[in-house]
Length: 404
Image (cartoon, rainbow, N blue to C red):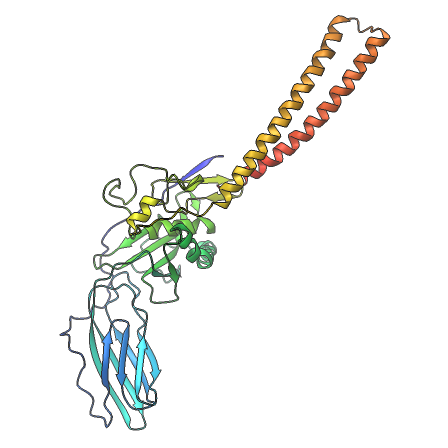
């Protein structure tokens, strides 16, 4: 089967700021002065991801979350609404994705029977590192007209269908594929907003890449077309796994400056196209009639760079198991064809001996009867061989159709 080399490159670069609004450093003050309302708001707790107040019973409250999401980050939700309970308690717990370290601010306003009141409280944002065991991802289709900040590649509206196919396939399978790729050690959760890292699917030709800004925020650009042509929906999942793998891999001994392994080392527990893992360059894919299959399993050395220490054996690869069964069947069928051909060769040798003995083709009756019997036997064997070869070729076609 022909093999195709697809370069899934990494660009580890500090991107220039894209104009995100910065929130100034705060003093660490828990809350601002209450408004001059008859029922002020008391801030109970204020941390990144959680905010609690006490106000009028059953008051309607709106919370604004002010943070710096980073040059490439998603950030938490900007506003939330809630209603106080009978004791006047309101508790918000919201997604707290990766953002730059610093400070943020909660601003809250409530309205109830005794009027309106507002308050605020600051909170610290600690430096956060993404954990391969559990992180959140959002998939976004880039609009070819609106574009995406920081992307200067010409976008092509004709690639919207390919973009949407990639988005649909990743939305349906990326969570499960991450778990399989990490041998059940990692959990990727797809969320509609406020993700730790966003995978932007770009309707353009380019090299898919993982980007990390100087402030620590990150994103992935996945292009609908690479240097070899349109990225299939199935292969887009493998590309996303590869680029997400660059959050942790690869640096140090054995890795190059582009974040890929310098030498392909087979993992003894991985089979087929997965044997070298996901983080090599170039990535070797298998191209067959109607399919393109690329690696989608991390090797043990890659899993260790991601922080995993107790690494189990990978689950059986169904495709590789099927290939093994078909190869065994093919060996049996091939042996049957060879045996039949050997038998036919013996019969043909006897026929040739008679022809050589009687070049005039004038055969005595008893020899003629023997000759006719041998010819009938040879023709029967030939038909049997043709049938066995047809079965053999069906198995070959089944093998060639496997994406592994």
